Image 1 (cartoon, helix red, strand yellow):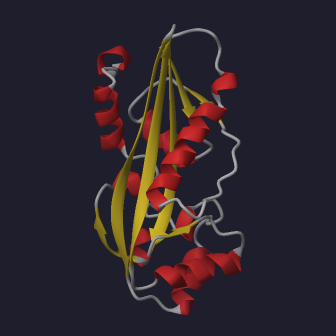
Image 2 (tube, one colour):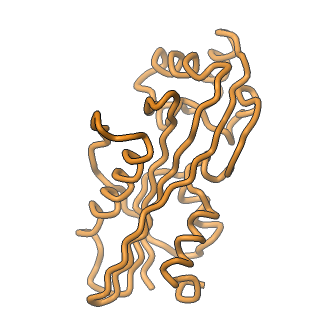
Length: 197
């Protein structure tokens, strides 16, 4: 089976590599803009689905093929927190999360093609993270330790996360950007476990 990860995230690549030995990677190219009517979860699921569909033209005609895509967002008070555009924006984002509980939502889409058979499902995992109360100098110091521009919420739990995080409720791999347990549940729903492993 041809397996394709539709993602530019190095963290997703690492997490999937721990599960599946061989897969191809294509980077989706879509606009990630939320509409006013969407909840954060609806937005994340739509973007995940659009990522999977956007890489379809890159797929060869060999089948079967499984396309895996994922989208991860940070949300607080029903507001979507994206990736920072610069250092000042990253500081503002961390101040917004400072001392509060927010959610990380990761949505996975599996698109399976086998001849005329097409199966397509999308589902999400939600984790809750509570930040410590941190000072301006601690925020500044944290951001100088990591590459923050490619991270929703301007932080990474696996990169000095204990400097910021007080408690985590939910899946750690979800927070990193690819909820592994959800992925296996979705493979089971599509009866693909034995075909892949």
